[in-house]
View 1: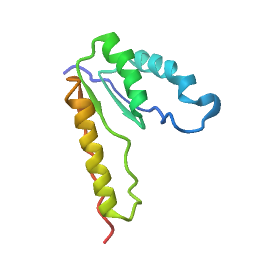
View 2 (view 1 turned 60 degrees about the vertical axis):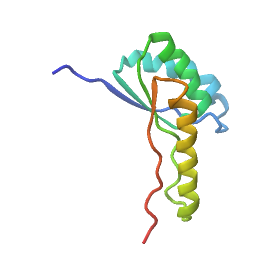
View 3 (view 1 turned 135 degrees about the vertical axis):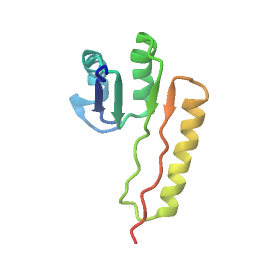
View 4 (view 1 turned 90 degrees about the vertical axis):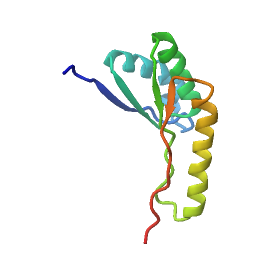
Length: 119
């Protein structure tokens, strides 16, 4: 059985006030790091739409990658308003379908669902 190289990478969202570590200063390093690992499967956390779009251009388009999985930024499990959280997850899923799965055949979505409300 051939080896499967898997990389999980928290790329940190681009909205944080990170100063010299802001996304604009590290995005090329993220691309180089991902390419250097020569992974068969890459999982990203905290990616915002603009970051994922950039990585799609740099990796999917540039290297002819056939499939990507979009796991949207998670919703806080500490939210104690299950109705609001359910609506937010539903809106995220609707957006992901409209913006990723339908217009671009390579990315596949990962459904977002609220955590169980404490009993």
